[in-house]
Length: 183
Image (cartoon, rainbow, N blue to C red):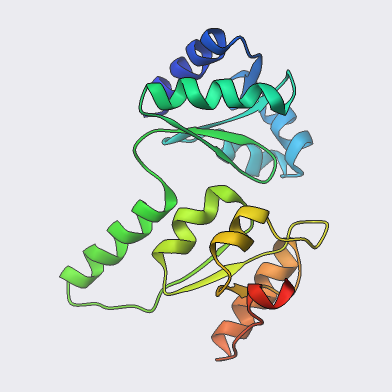
């Protein structure tokens, strides 16, 4: 769970000689200021169970040592839109596959669609039938998602507006442009 990840992040940062600032070290006000979330949403974001978002205070070059130290403990550092995340043996893809499997066992089969804009979403997007890559705020696609999912669909714009437009297009039965068409 998260308490173990918080403890591990602090130990790994010390081992790698990297200064990090995790969600556990932040107030809801700081999370709100750094993410643009409302105060209430920031409070909810702090109530995590399976990952620990963090910032590297020593520059991104220091992240490699932290990632290697994490791998040595069976943990993984993944990259989100604004934060890095320390995760254990779970990811968004495992969660989706588990949920779909539970429904399938109960005789309910669904079409699956996933939307994501950052490398942390890759396992989720690989686990669904219809992956949709949402552009980042600067209208570019996360390079890892673009490289790994050239056949995925591309949302028409960044952020919540792009996400919403993609969902409405899917619900209307339309296909979106393919990521590979951006290249």
